[in-house]
Length: 288
Image (cartoon, rainbow, N blue to C red; front, top):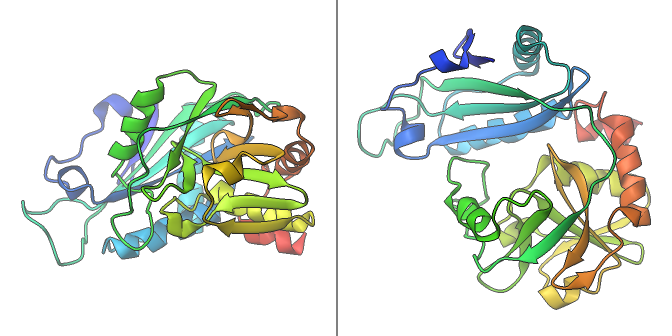
């Protein structure tokens, strides 16, 4: 497998970065994961927008542009003979002296990691369980998709490796937050609900796309603070992320839900399939 690192395409076993990289020493780094469908990197511009905003927060003086990123991806897919793939884009702060740096970082490490995925398939269900581990608060004003992942790892250890189970965080105040690697949605009537960003959740790219998709399909969308009791009154429930897409939930806290038979989740999934091979940004929905 070939990866990209700082302008070079090299075999993954030959990749090296310095132990003085502040992404390693202090967690000063960000990443994005996205899916490539038949050669198309779905919502690439949205991922780059979020990444670049986060780099500004971390004082990392680097921005990724559309054409540069697209060209790197095309070459990486060609070298690895991939058309459907998982891609992780990682930007770390780069080398610095030991100690907390105040000045901006000028020499970042830029890495792309691919791995093969099968072509996108039908809806698959998961079961949800409530985690004992509470969602930690973000390091700054809003959660970044950063190297700080211990909270997620502790939660994953709590539920184990079962592929059909997702753990759901509560905040320290008892509000429903998000999954270990996903955002949470539920349906009541003609309203799609999801926790607000100020609960400390990651503002997922698929989360943002599904909100736009729901509005386009005449669903009302409400974001807020919700106790578990209110969430369990839902008629449908699902989670989202950029690799697993839209995943309906069949059970949560012992309560049954329609899972992949839910009408709303089926409709949103059909629409998702229609767009995943051609859209560069959720904003394109407004012109469709």
